[in-house]
Length: 184
Image 1 (cartoon, helix red, strand yellow):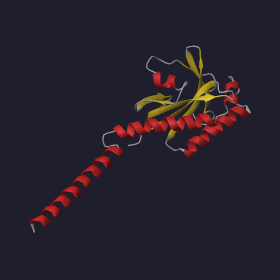
Image 2 (cartoon, helix red, strand yellow):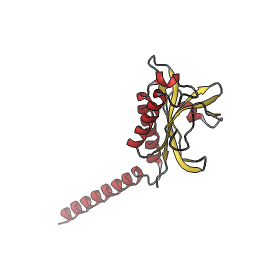
Image 3 (cartoon, one colour):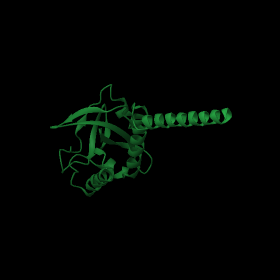
Image 4 (tube, helix red, strand yellow):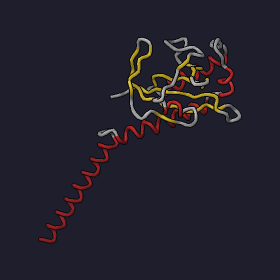
């Protein structure tokens, strides 16, 4: 009878250990402490931005200049960005930019003509803190954490991902940026 008691106790201990491990895995993977969730979000942002960037016509994007907002090329890219956003509802904002000297400028903003979207050529001057943003012109990158940003009258807590857009020769001609809204 003592041998049976030891086996039952051993089985109960094993089951308890499995439940504890399963509980810890659940807590960590569901964002209980934020470690796995933030890493996964960054990886997902990079992958999503890279996937979108690969589908943008880099040749057409490179040719767009201020005043081209009514051209078929601009409208096609803007509509394509909006389609990406529609199929990924967590995306709040999606846009393309290019480097111009020490500054960057918007090329196609999915919100142009719909909301408070910006026109081609609106300038943004990156700061020393914009390392992840600037890295997006070279390789897929993502901000390490959510941040709050004000744009016009709107304020949003977002996390951003970026990826370079290339033309048909493989030359980087810009970057796509995506901003995901904070969900609680």
